[in-house]
Image (tube, rainbow, N blue to C red; front, side, top):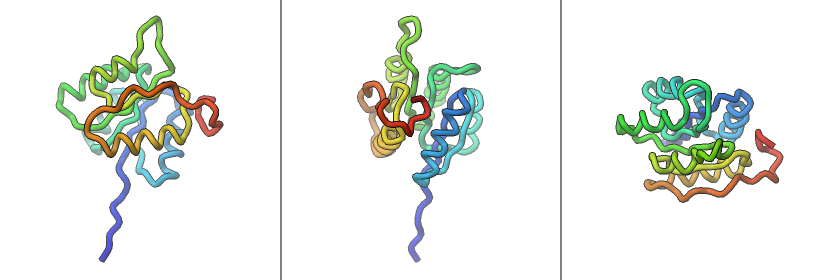
Length: 147
């Protein structure tokens, strides 16, 4: 009997409900199973209970921010793959470069299209080492939650 393996569970972490809803819809349409969290504290609970294989993580959120979440996961030697996202540097602080230093497998600047999100997830799921820093997302695609 042929059994089809279910698609991996992906955790989307962003404090903006519209962003979570958009990413969830894009991923579910592609057959991924999706969990959502509004901050790092919620994300850590879900990671410990449901063991997603990949997390799409906003770097600037209310509550526990993305960098704090990455650091805590790496202290625990957790193997979840991380795709960090951010709207850009704030006061000269480039969270995406810092996220890479602390172990994010890939980083995307917002806004980015559904295609960029799906391609990035596919690449991260098929690699063991972090990808190079990605340039700013494709703003020409109107299927983006941010543009």
